[in-house]
Length: 367
Image 1 (cartoon, rainbow, N blue to C red):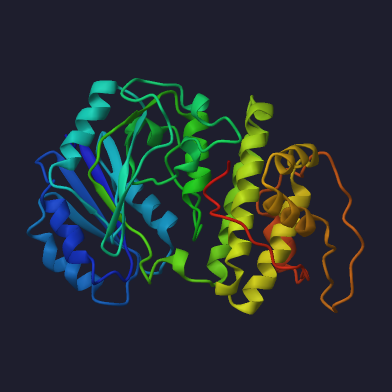
Image 2: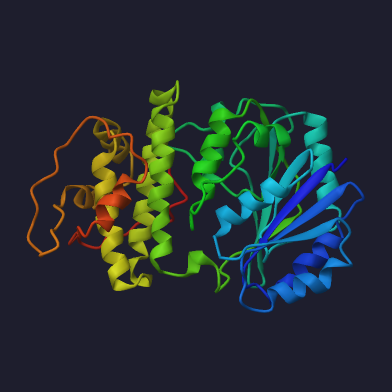
């Protein structure tokens, strides 16, 4: 029986493939499998994967005819996986030798639905240890309790799918899959669903995964329209939380995080193409108007002055029609319509927004 399935999507990362495959070899075991998903690469990635296949026990390649993005590639890997436990690695990252056996031992000993781990962030030659923002370690916990409080970084602000290991029962219950087609922020609705619907989790101080930050080919470094999928992702988070049995408990956290991410992108708006920047403003303004307004007001009151002021301006500016004239004000309602993706739909209908630029600090920090 396969004990662990390691799902590794690759897309045009030829310069990193040899290191990634080498790290998998140093973690190979007879009951481990490696599902290598080639997401329709156009460089030498497919050739390098084929060359490395014979020297990596338990490896197989699954190919996409068309590029689907990271979320879709991970789903392909999940569907192909046979292991009792599953974990992920991105095609430009790597493992420390012997890391995966220790990871499996952790989830077996704790007997939880999933286990989250720290990681090493690599920016050029700089190495930084990034820890799961949760204090209690090495004991089974209720994942719902790790979502709050709203004004501090919690486990849902540490969304990296590769920083953990997951029991197959999460696949069987439909919790582990990602939202098909999301090009960015695909981990956000995934981590929220994981914490709301899984029964148990644990955090362990296991170090051994190395994450490359600032890679030029990474989507987070590219300011094209795919970046705007973060709105679709957070609309999904909000829609899911609103149906939760403890919606009142979790909505302040979800809304506050959404605002922080919007502010983060507005701060970095100069890296977007002009047309994409306009859509970013329009979609963000629409999303803010569709949030529960009482919860939004409370969130803005607890944020720093610069961030809250810019979000308020974005929220109240009127959208422009396609002919450039100002549209009528959108009514303020107490609750948003439960339609994930609706902000995106409005923006793509041709409505634009002439808003002042906004800035903020790192959107991953919600305090």
